[in-house]
Image (tube, rainbow, N blue to C red; front, side, top):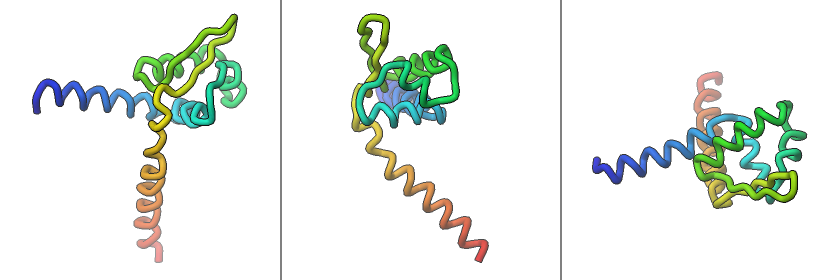
Length: 106
């Protein structure tokens, strides 16, 4: 593997790692519908403002989201909305695993 390939694989893993937490994945899915302020995301999750901000920082550092400050509010949106296009494939893996396990229960 070349240094360039290693760097690309590392960058890809970083994106998956950022989306690998349930709260961050939920936030990304919420942002697929359009930008939201931090306050809207706090309302949707049973967590305090600082916790949500930390999750958003991780998503931002991975390049998943971008932010824009407007007055006292910070709004977030997906940098590249197609990032969630992989979700049907992920759900297909989940279904295949479920089908596999159910096969042994019959």
